Image (cartoon, rainbow, N blue to C red; front, side, top):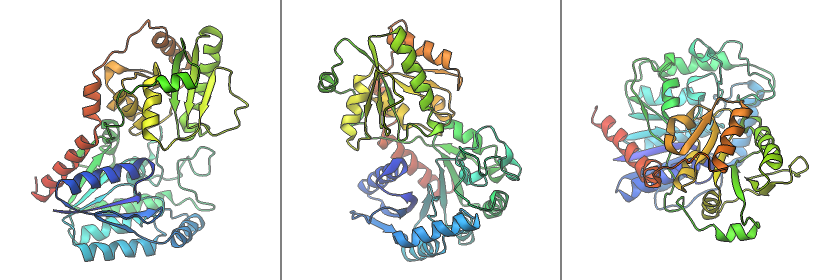
Length: 409
């Protein structure tokens, strides 16, 4: 079996690492693997990895999309190169993942695969494959009826791709609907049961079976680790540690303001506690004295040591379709306190997590204190977590999807 995997990035970023793990596992199992991606450096690999266009071309396509408003329709060169690659490689399966960020023209790619009866798996990581373009629709339900007059267009915290002038959400929604119609060789996977339940409500996917395939991680890295070095480095003897891991602390969807509020309350009421923010980028002027900041680290082993160091991890996102933080902390044996954000509560081990309604800071703080004070023990089976979120488990799930599609099951 030959599988062609398409994603916006490869080997870096959350989906880029996932794609590399899937490709590696499939290759080690003896499958033929080809990966096509849009942004980033050229990659050498034992299997074929193809960058669909130069950085210059990608920037031009990005500029065109911002000018025209067609975020998923202004990538003619990279789309043409993908079609040529498909014709050359003749894959048995094409697996589309995140094909946003001007990687290819989404509707045109789906139409191309449909017209040629190529067996296709669409793996949904965010909501744009069934909306007019937004990665998170939040409470808006216009994606069920046409994305007319999108309420996120030109708003401060918009989850739409940038469009300087035109609101094309309704047009792109219609193009996608037309592309999906009659595509009998298409199977949908989603990265969490919550996201699957959302996709099932889309008119694009009526009467289609939608399969949940959880994202995977390297469980040889994310496991309980010795954190004595970090405890000594940060002078944490006798301290309770609350950890917050984020790629962008001040991005509103990540809820950094709630982390600061929890820290301020802990500073007054639980003085033997500290809050570590891993991935912090800022000047630190607004931080309470009990906050320790750690720059973003590419060292995954060190990140696992921080998870192992913590008494609890704090997740304050408004929306997550999966949440690698949830998987990583549980694999390291550390429980999590969080807001309900969609994906996390649908993939988490119930014994190891404590959720409350989004924005309820009093409930969130109460849960933090309960865990840090040892009034509530969140005990769970770390082995179960490492098996559930393993990259091997993920790879096997995708293999089964491919084999079932090949065999018309």
